[in-house]
Image 1: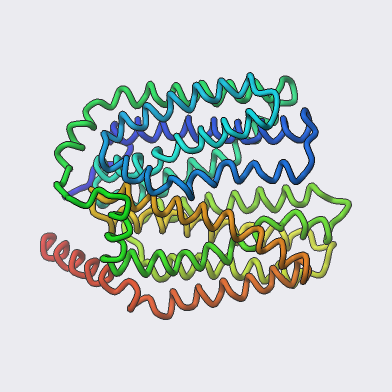
Image 2: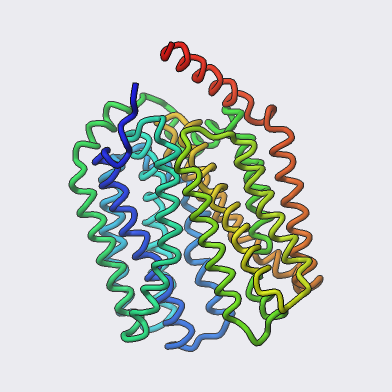
Length: 416
């Protein structure tokens, strides 16, 4: 049986369009807030350092709650409410004249937005055929990566001729447009009601109980957490590395980051053409690519070599892109439909916790050891995690591999 092209799935296209508009608007907003704090209000570095905390802390505190809500309430309506409220709060940024008003608004908006990811991924599972889940996951990851590049680029162009407040207005409008697009997806509500599975596991611990009962998810969360922690231990120290290696050429950092973004996009595009995934090679291989690049930065000695940091940035991005898509695909395939929201909520809480704890620890290590030795150390630890994933993949992901083999055999029988 031939699978319909994903772009002919009008429900997915509308959901994808709403996500795309919202994502690009978010990166406009992040740039605007950075410029407002650093250039307009001229705040000190320590105060500015609290901004990522305002974005990440809600995920740690309320990520699990958001996942439970997305499994218990109509997801489309939940996303619409989140978009509308986020848009209205963003308009409120225009009236903030100090961090004492702006920071609470960022925290509240970040909390409200927590329901978007688990609700969105649950809807993808409902409207996309299983054979196209890898493609759908890669497309959503690709637009997120494109937003990281296009959002700041367009936002910087707007900031050159206007003010940060204009970028905030654009983000608020993008949230409202996203909500309007979601309003056209009323038929999804019927699909959700058909997919509902009665379950008594609706409490806040239901997600953890479910993950603990699923070997693949449990081992994957443990493995991936180690990998993500070792990466975030040092990836925020790139400005320090380039300041030491190329003190008079700050533009080279931009070149490396652009190459990393391109590499991530290429990695996602590669997986977009596949229908199935080998978890061991996807996770282990992607972390190994990141480890190689970190070790390369740790051993970088020739400041005049212009191609090396760009090439290493490309490798970093390639590994990052594959890793992101592979993890989203794993959660989609290995999680029961009525648990997707809770599992994604857990994932968001876990990653936010790592985002809060790993960079400060990396900063302390850099302060005591130096930036290049820590890059080298992080690369070695990441390579160990990667080799464990590749070498022990039959034990970690054996159920999935057997399931794929059975499905392939059934397809061969049907074709025969």
